[in-house]
Length: 208
Image 1 (cartoon, rainbow, N blue to C red):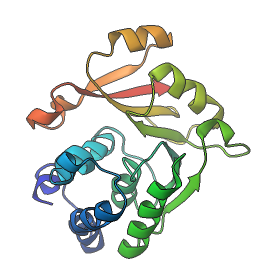
Image 2: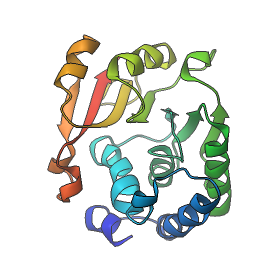
Image 3: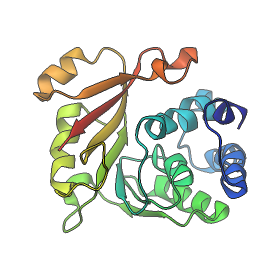
């Protein structure tokens, strides 16, 4: 929690408690269902929670938005964002059901009420639209955009940002971006968080 407090403040006591409990809960569940690599579980706050919250540092989601997290895995970036934005609804989707079992259990334990989950693939979601799609290192940008575009609402509610895809990616993205045919906004996370871990990591934003 110290790492979170280094960059964010103004949390309610409920939010502080939820963030503080994430570490122990994920460690406990990871023993039963491996949703986070063994080498990463001890670095949960830096490599997963704070990484997820880089989106919150860049996008101040307004109350009432609906956001889908594609390929959420163990709940990243969706769960930390749901704690950060308690009045935004998050729909966490993954093709592996047992990972969502962990997400459901942690949300129930922490009293997170603005998260729903669905065991499915992105391309199988019909008749639902969202303001934003978020995702973390799930697939190439070209594929992510193909899956995301049909899920995005046309009307915009955010004053400074159009609806779109927001994804967290790392490494040299030049070829991946070129192959996508898109011209995304790319923000180096090291400009937000000074930790060495974020040196080659980016927030990629593609407006609809």
